[in-house]
Length: 355
Ligand SMILES: [Zn+2]
Image (tube, rainbow, N blue to C red):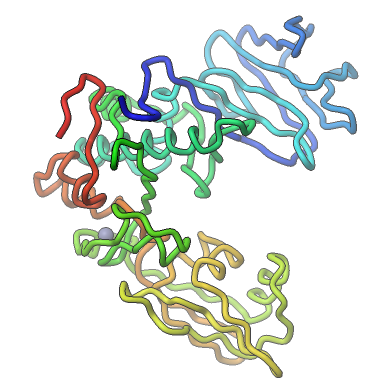
C-alpha cells in the first residue's frame, strides 16, 4: 500500500478567498449549516461579513458556515462543486472549497493548461495535479485547508471551465499518482522550462532525487518561451520594500552568477553605499511571479528604467507543461512523459498494475 494513496471518495480542501471583509454566496437551493448542525435561515444571495468575533449573515454571528446547493455553490459569482465553508481567518474571511478530489482535478485542467491539448498531455497534467494535491494534503493534514487556489500551489477557478476532455483526462487516469520509494512525490511542475528543467535545490534548497532537472528542448518553439518586461527602478524598489527587503535608492540591478541550468543564482540590487543580493526566487516572489516569469533572464537598467529579457515561464522544476504538450504531439504516452520529467518515479495505479 502506498502511503497517501487515493481512494475513490477522497476529498480536498482548497482556499478560494482569504483576508476579505465580505463575500457573496449564492446557488440554487442554497443551504447554510452552522457548526452546531442547525441550518441558518437564508434568502440568497447571501453576504457574509467578517466581524471581530466571527462572521455574520444578516446580523447573526456564527463561527463558521458551511454552504451547499443543489448544483454549484457560487462564491463571488463563480461556481464551485462541493461545499463552501466560510470562517474568520487571520485578517478577514477565509473561504474554503471542500470537494471531491477528482472533481477538483477536472476544474483545474483548464486553469493550468488547455484541455484542447493532446489527450496524453491532459492525462499527464491530471496525474501530476492529483499527485501534487495528495502530497500537500498529507503535509497539511492538520491545517484548515490543503491547497491555495493560486500559482502558490495549483491554479483553480471552480467548475465553470470544466469540459468533457478535461473529465476524460482525469477519469482515464483515475486514482493514479507518481511515487518514489513507496511515497507520493512532490510533483512540482511549471509552464515552460526554456530548454532545461531546474533542480529543486536551486529553487527551494531542497534536493529530491526525482527533481534533479532534465534537458527539455520540446518547449522551445512555444509562444511562452521568451518574455520581456520593462519596469522602473522605483517600481522594483517599492515592491521589494513591500516584501520586507531593506532597499533604499537602488541605482542599478545586476544578474549574479548562473547555476548549472542557466538560471540566475542571485539578482543584485545596487545602492549608493551597499548591495543586496536576493535569490532568483526571492526576487520573483517580491516583484511578482507573473511579472518576472522565470529566473533565466538578462537585465539592464538605464535612466531609471529596467529592461528584463528572459526565457521560460515558471520555476522550472518538474514537468514542463509546454514540453509535455509537444511530446504528446510527437506520440509519447502520458506515462512516458511523466517518467521523463520525474526520473526514477513509479506510476502507481489503484488496480495494482504498476509500470
Ligand atoms: Zn521545457
